[in-house]
Image 1 (cartoon, helix red, strand yellow):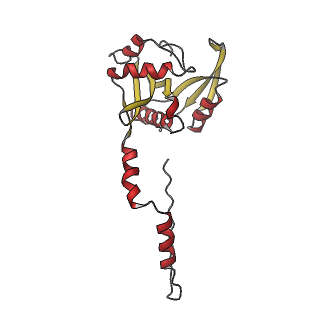
Image 2 (cartoon, one colour):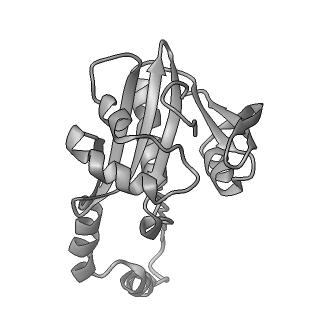
Image 3 (cartoon, helix red, strand yellow):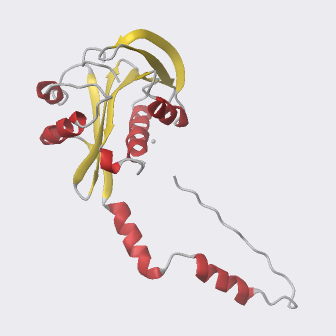
Length: 201
């Protein structure tokens, strides 16, 4: 992520079809039993659907700024901005920005900020609350950004990440980003190189 505002998208469906011919094989009861063993219990289906419905990704609004600040302050590896800088994200000025939040049960658990300049998009910040990590919320945010960039005809998407942040690098690479450059001594406190990644949408 960049250090200031100046430069600063799994569902697996597996279906097994069985063709049974001939009256000598009475397998219907067997496969029916197997189906009932492995299928999701009816009483759990509404609960699973409700859990999915409680999670959503939406565009951020100015009223979200205090929560964005709180999440940002809890992450040491991202770019830290002032409250005024966050509020300016919602002003009608250039460059245009995409600000997304992901919430569960109405509480924001992560956010993403990207800016659009001409036909390019730069991912500036992406944060997920510590207690909500490993729930693929970062993936939800990134996938939504990619979809919105495609809808606007914007490509490619760029970002920078600390060279030592292997978890973040693996995350971006898993979503199709490819290393496209290196910026020596780009970060401060501590001083470190930035790896530049690029995704063609």
